[in-house]
Image 1 (tube, rainbow, N blue to C red):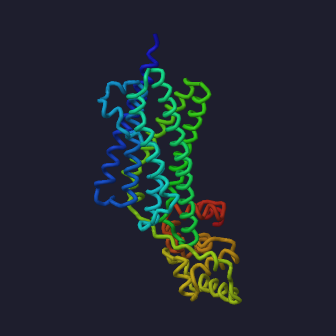
Image 2 (cartoon, one colour; image 1 turned 135 degrees about the vertical axis):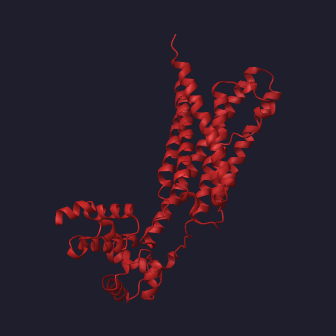
Image 3 (cartoon, one colour; image 1 turned 180 degrees about the vertical axis):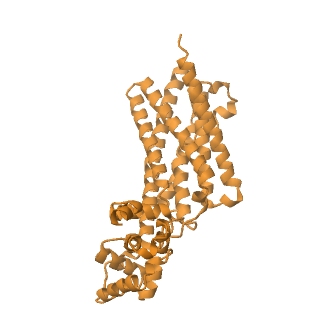
Length: 379
């Protein structure tokens, strides 16, 4: 007899239980650690806590041992899969803008959570008032299917909305800042894609089970649970090593009036020429914290108007526009004998770059070479 089955069961159990305890600890840290206390992190803690509870209960369901739990625990409506995507969206909304007011559609998340709680509560009358075991089993299958459908729909809607919010925010940054360090939420994009991937796998598991392939559905759903556990590990890893991701609250987005967006005056060319003069003669790009607002104030026009000029004349956003000048400055200094005693990153700092990783990425994108590769080619 092979020991492979018990070994796999033991491995899955240990992985999920540790992930669940890991998530519980993370939630406590986010809620109680003074430096991490914020409205956004509170919602992240709620999402992690919901994931931890789901993982713990999945172990119980996997081994079919729910009957061993106290009766109050068995029927306690705490299996909130819908809370995970809803609270992650709220985490992102309040991270972007701590003063955010939830819109009508965003408030629907609470309704989805309430619906799942209602379906959980329905297990009580089903088990109390049903006349026989076959009826109980039939009604419970309906409730399980309904809960799964509600959870999947909620995940697709709210993870999708969260992704849209992050991408809009990133677009805002590149339109308004020449340096995005300590402001970017780009790290959330792979995190959200992982969640969407897990949701797709869950949906496939749901469909497979619906068409009667129970064993295959069980295997794919185990993959979903393991994926959820791995997400908790990833969050914990980043919380320990990159706590600034959870601590730094980005600036509030100021939305441009769309009705004024397309209105350019006859002085556009003059403003554009003044902009080029400021960049070339006064080398504004060497200011590591240069923003669209700073430049617009020097030109005496609004930041939205300046953004429009850059988009139309240069076909670039503000980030690309400013960093193109910085890259040109680096290229010039790399072949200038006066800067031979400078390190490459020292030259980058002199030219307005703040982050080595950003410098390397931008330089490679704009020239096709690494900074060191470009220097070797030209000297």
